[in-house]
Image (cartoon, rainbow, N blue to C red; front, side, top):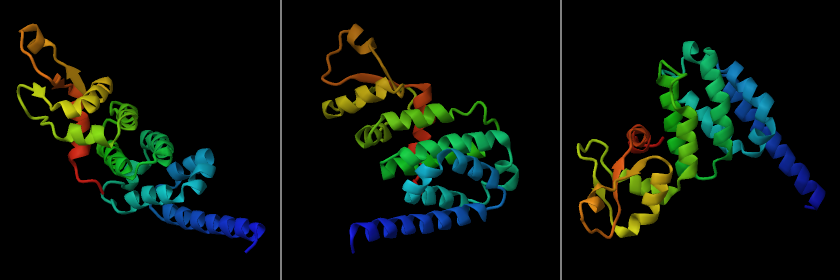
Length: 203
């Protein structure tokens, strides 16, 4: 197969895959407006990242009790859908895309979508890597003292999590003269909100 034929075959496959995803999306009750808005804005990106677009559509298809016609016809949901899909298409890490879907499902089920921290949650997920996530998942959001002392090997992840606003650096032990090779930290209130999406089993 020469170069021209390879390009033609690739383009044909892309068109076919895009048609399949598009047909599936438009078969879901009420999702047409949000999907068409996304297609108008990110059509090229959706064609180039068809696997991710398909994952997104399958999430909706597999949760019909969440993505009801009443929910998807709401303008606030549609705005969130368009914003989130753009970010999803550019997320390279498959595991993080699973947590991403948890966050969006949380957005879809909340009644007050204006106050839901969709942008902040997605931005935070984008800022941390899998090592950070694994370290964060080891902490217990239900602890009453929230004073963690993690192993030195977790220091890089801890500092990343502090920078992301999920942990707060607790200086009290040092002020009291305690010596420790590892940082003392508290989980922030935002961290307690965020960790719920990481503890749920990803789809």
